[in-house]
Image (cartoon, rainbow, N blue to C red; front, top):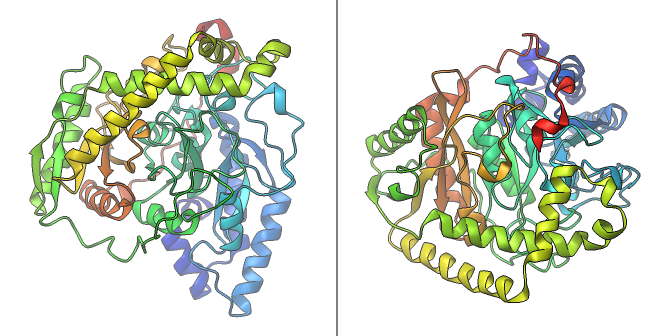
Length: 479
């Protein structure tokens, strides 16, 4: 029974809570029980606040009894990537440097979920300061992929992807600078939405690169993604990049379908990549067929080469990250993980001219994507080119088989949606990209793909299978 409750979507839980068939306390206890049973293998959480979660759940139940309804997340568990502040809770950023940092106030996302009556379970693992990589020289072990516990969950929102796939929570907040929402979502079989740059406030989130950082959710279903975006989106003057743009009802037209919509297919971004597996290509082709069968017009389009976006994003991210961490790199270098220290230190070699050139290139690349989207409603492209690497595999995150950073650089909304399992039983996914502030259209497209693939009915992976003790793996394997 516990497992059945834990696997509920936000929509299913909301119905059960309002009908009286389910209490928030029972739903929260089911989440906590599953975490206690399996997270020793998955390592999704770095902190679980069972007492606080149950207190919030009792309050949600009291509100229901009093006839007060704060919305669809009332009484539903969620978790935060551990670079989001939650008042009274540690924000460690998965780093020795911040183990003792207790947040004094809520991040904007935690604040909005709290106002919506959601139940905060705890904090989720990340790469150190959202950059480093899966490593064993940090205070907490790296998250593992619930579909194959020998593999990485991706990153940097690794705990967020793992928590969704494992059935620990139906909603997990992530952040995305060069693909850190859609990458873990793709490899863990979650829905990962990176909204338009500025759509969701970053107040109270430890920055990686402020010109690229996005906040967004990983969820079990597309419907849950639409629900949660409606809660966390909106202008916040405390975030200088926050956009004062209208927030749609993302659920209202979610099932409107794609008939008559024009979908651009930038084949050149992925089809010649040596990393693209036959299974991943079949997943993309299946998504194209599902959209066409339901009335969408799918046509080839061209945007600038993927390598240009990667190079541009890497210069911007590395320079900005180094600027943030320079004092600590000088004074407390030994407290960083080895991977993180190396990746941050590269920023010292990026000069002002290089940074300005990257800023100019970014404007050109973003304008090119705008131009293509002027002739179509959305793009469909690859996200994962191959399954998640093994944790013991000497593959740096910078060369992982993912194509996600393009639309962090351009700032357009993008969503990763599962399309099925590959021949080894690992999740496959595709990516839809929309016009600025038009998340509603890509949610519609993702909903069609989800329903056609049957992913919204996919059982959770079996976590009862014994996992290897990855703590025995030498940290040198990650250098």
